[in-house]
Image (cartoon, rainbow, N blue to C red; front, side):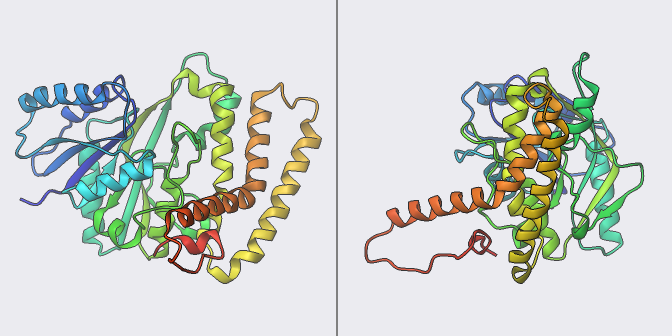
Length: 352
């Protein structure tokens, strides 16, 4: 029987978090006619994630016919969510790959709703490449409302109404990787095996690799949709709302903005739009500093906005520097006799 859906869970040091996700998947309902599987992609964890998943595999056998709903484990040594998701795509047996983070708690009919929307897309003959759902943020009790209002779009919280719609390339809004469902064929045809953005690691907070993936899909003509029937609770711990996390996190979001902006544009438009974006980013940053200069360094929301605006502004220079370092590293690895033409811009280095 054909496997319809692969639920893939990339995780890093998720031993304390992943049991709740797996328990929720084990309790999924309305699955009588659905062939599906679960993959855990351990992104080089240093904790006991492996032991936790192995223990869960034993109890999983008591709840499911493992020939019909297998629970499989793979380890991806390259650090970063982009590498973990690529490994999931390579190992998946399902036509559709439904990604869950290890802090995402899906509703009990989530897999069923994934299947229903995928089938609806097939029946309508749409070139459906990916779709995301509704994601509710679950915050600590004593959270700052103004802070949450500002950072919720960056924390994979999506509540965009109760009607499905298509994300258009020119709207520049896309679903996050949490709860994202991608057609495996579309990914293999449209998404490079190595992205420019690899995802956050222990040494870097650079992010937006999920947006890079979806822009590649859209540029190849695949449709990306919003399906509000797929609901997830995203558990946000207190430490993700504190300064020591938010400032580096938003710096990482801003520093990658150039890549996402340029990927949306044809090559010939990029120089002009780089200049226009820089002028607009500078205008916003100066306006913010003038308006809130007395509160900078004292108000977390204002500092978060400053960090993002400043990082947006320097993103082209930063990503160019990163690309230069990578080229120099690759040249040192080559033999002296090897030759080749170096890319002239960061965007030309991206394989098609």
